[in-house]
Length: 342
Image 1 (cartoon, one colour):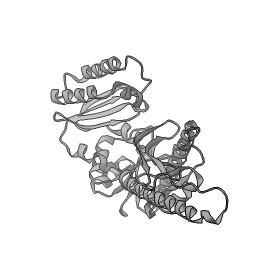
Image 2 (cartoon, one colour; image 1 turned 135 degrees about the vertical axis):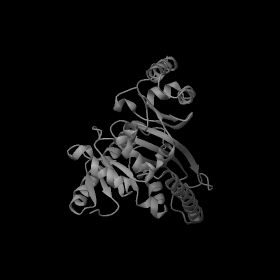
Image 3 (tube, helix red, strand yellow; image 1 turned 90 degrees about the horizontal axis):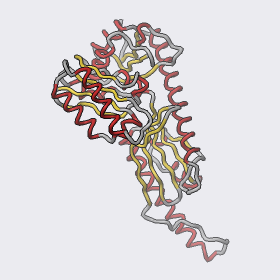
């Protein structure tokens, strides 16, 4: 995750109201329950927080679908009478419903949850069309479809080969091949566009074997290096959505584990060559100099003055990642640097 996505929040003048509404199981009284939960948080800071910021966050809570808040959880940050951040997050991982009013936004739980997700562009294709889904997948937890579309090639459905081997069918066969190729080119072009817009970690091809092969040979270089394939799922009505979901969660878990292991290796190498630091003091100094390229956090333990550290790193376009559980660093925080520091 690049912290630059939070730059607008950190460039704003505080103090800040940070609200987490935990995810859970939606029920028929979702609207009432969400309202009561918000009012309970409201009362905790009513005597200290800015009224305009409280009102702005309240309007944002009311505007959300209650069922979606209960299912996904929500994090909101308000300041100066405006809502600066309003995003889905599994807040239950950070302790349930919470509210804070202070000089910094408290986004450690949100950052950790975001760092545990994998962005997957799922392409379920046959020879004449494809369903393209932009997924945010949390390993071993859930997946969220944040955008889906269907693309159908201009050549339409005329891609079926004639039966038999008669020479009279050669022209029809060639026309079918041309249509299939033209459809694949159009779908591949849209995949390239979605890769540019969504910036996934993985482009997963599912569906018909022939369609996957056509797309694999036509996508651009940026998408090609992200490609993975699966035999699960498909556009056929009998294809198992459950099986494909299991595959997506497995892929996300493997990707996250590999990413954490790579960060741990880079940290070890960096500490040996002065291109990494650990501990609140050294990391804070490096962040204030704009030297942090990747902030490394313990998944569960909050480091010293983490809120201020996140601000410094966000304002200098640093990234953030989580270390494997077996990796222990001083004060639960470390950083990979943009250059060696003496």
